[in-house]
Image (tube, rainbow, N blue to C red; front, side, top):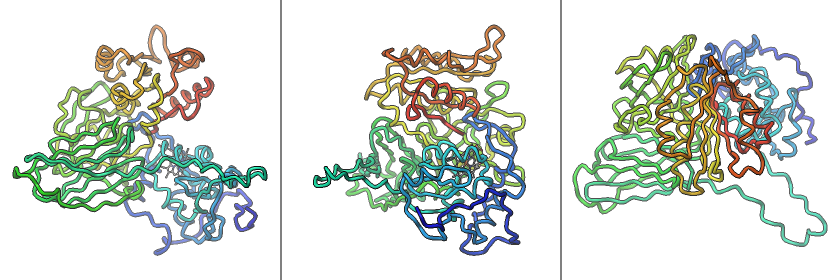
Length: 534
Ligand code: HEM
């Protein structure tokens, strides 16, 4: 790109926030109140663990680089994209050239942003942001914090859409038709169908095999329902006006992890065959549109689990909402704390693992580790039955379809990072396509008292020997063990027919990084690794 107006700022001198007294009122970046509070609060809240076990990996920002300062800079009229406001398409080759702190571009979901000026404002620090520059960082971004509203935060940094590199046509072949470009698999749009018995209406949504859909079902009244299907980060909304009245809650809700088929069975208030189901409209929402959304949930059950963790069961207030997160996704719980809104992510745990009935179907159950300085876990711990808490729609970047080609899978969990890993066990073991041969869980804790669900994991092993769980204790009296290259190397030996070809990891960030480094050393490719980050 030769246009000099596209050049990044020449110096890397610290930015002096412009002297603007108030936020610009129109046309500028103005985070809605809640988002602003969330971000402010998360930027100032002290470190605490998330449910996926990750201690928050946030950096202290230099004075003058708060979210408010960023908003001021965005609204100051500074040319943050470097394009003078023009939208300029960017090829992958061009993108790769902008990979420095002083000149950093990043593509997320097909849109390229100039993040040079954002570097010092990034709550995760410059080094973390640098991991995504010069390339398509969509997967990385979603793995770390799919919930961050980047289109809003980086609105003024937008350069243009990401283009494929031009195909070079050699003289020899120019007269022949070019091969069709390799196209991405088509976007999944759920297909609706319905069936009925005289007493029941079943709404069916077909996605795709291993598409791993999630669901959010909301009742408006006895004849009106909103069904939202979450698939590959997009929400598809179906607004139903039913022919006649149905009972709430649904009798059953089934999501086939392997088939990708969703079935919602509703009892009819009056038994009779219907001539049709009624009508519906459908639309699509990008996940960021839901950034601001949360639902009020009520605590239905609390129980101490061990010395420093507890169980928490929630159901939606008035039982109006039924939420089924996709496998490996988390939800965020929100609470007004420290003068702002604090959010922490937690992956729900299957009711059977806590010895609970699957009913009521709208219930969500969590295992929460209490951190001495964790405002959120302390807040949740003191809640009693009937207390309210806000819960966001499901979020995450895990793709179940990535695992289908693999028959020997290793799961690495540390501490409370067990919860997303647990959600994978049944879908993997029950899969009929390319049946799994071995599913190994290596579970790392400090002491044996810290181990979660030991008996349940043993029970699962006795039911299905393809699954096994091995414990490692860093503070064991006899033989302390941590994650090391020597420990994992035997599982990745070439020529060994049952060597592991896929690894899912969840723990505190130091654990995740250590595991990733070891796997890289053992030549496991990035597309064979998924790291759950809270
Ligand atoms: C793709 C490369 C990126 C990496 C590896 C990365 C990494 C991180 C990390 C490690 C944190 C701290 C995590 C935590 O608190 O749990 C963080 C926080 C954050 N990052 Fe990034 N980041 C990236 C890109 C971006 C971009 C492009 C934006 C701009 C919108 C952004 C905005 C934020 C915000 C707002 C937070 C605070 C989030 C919160 O506490 O909820 N990040 N990032």
